[in-house]
Image (cartoon, rainbow, N blue to C red; front, side):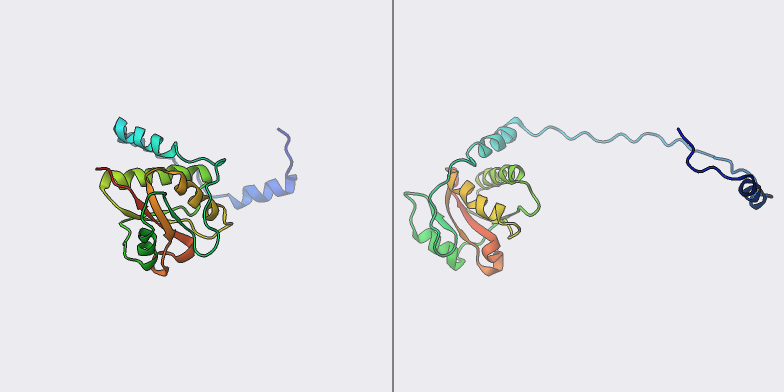
Length: 176
């Protein structure tokens, strides 16, 4: 390794004079015992499989036909359109909230799948997904992914109290 800065003899002498009367510190290092970190128990296989299955439904290639006029909304064929009206009016209160801010598309898909699986597992009928405004990537993709999932009955743009146009209220079909 090259020495980039070499001190002249005058600078070296000045340094020695400035350190005159000092002594070297004694390093009294203490070796701390290693702390054993608790190893997380692996999640039950059923929960892991549930999350893998939930993300299976989301495709970036498939583009479902969603209404473009008015607020973002969707009703699964065979579901009563009155459910969307109830979502819009705020008759349903979300019990679970998912914040997608700062996530990549891949992470967002995983979290959406986990949310839907948790809703079915915990018997939660309504959830709120906050995708934010940002660069409009998650805002555009989230409804497309939700419309592909077979357990999603309907979704509608959230009322102002739950995030307005930066969030969606989602109705999930519960397991019987």
